[in-house]
Image (tube, rainbow, N blue to C red):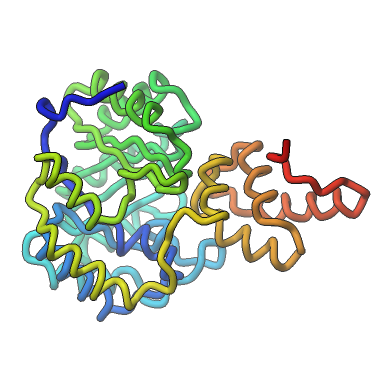
Length: 328
């Protein structure tokens, strides 16, 4: 497999530090931090800046973790700060509702990324309709896309396109895809869609970025490949080092637990819950994640984590060997 970069076009880059990145920050962003990050990203030349709880609009909850700062306040602050970049938010139907979407528009978003499981594009129709009525750039996210083949994903993408999506993304929420998996799925959408553009968002659990890669690294790679869409490499390097560096509680990288997510193919936000519950019950988080992957758990099924952990603990108490599922 190879790519001909001569035929490629520079991509538009939407940064998710103030949304997906909030998981690493335990949803603790302050207004001052959001302003500083947004200003650095705007000066660095990104096309869009996504702002919301890590699980999207309405995600601040007991189940997903409460935000330190109300997300509409963060959206308003970022919109006031940026001069060029579009302000975006993520919406997962069922977590966020039309009410939160309307509030986010009033707060200043210009783009909404509507995310469903890759088998459930049909639940997004009213949300795309509302987004277009309100003049937003509407983006579809097909999450956990590693779980279904390219042809199936293309059919789901066509539904989103028919609802009004301007862009449809292949989303590797678990960081489980190999390069050929990502290539085949993006190719299928490129061949199927007639109007909507194609996007890609992934996680770096297996160390195979570029997808949800550090922005400064992505900018450098795109520049060297002759595909820079206007990103300021040195400004983004400074932003990562001097703006974001002091804020992060820890630097995300493919460690033991995050690799297990990619290996098992489970939703990335399960990790912190599995670690917490595993510690409380004395069950290895890796065993929990691998069992969730076997059961094909998806976002919204976080309650399974406790159930699985309790079952594993009970099995061990009944004399199970406790050997990890991936042992030879």
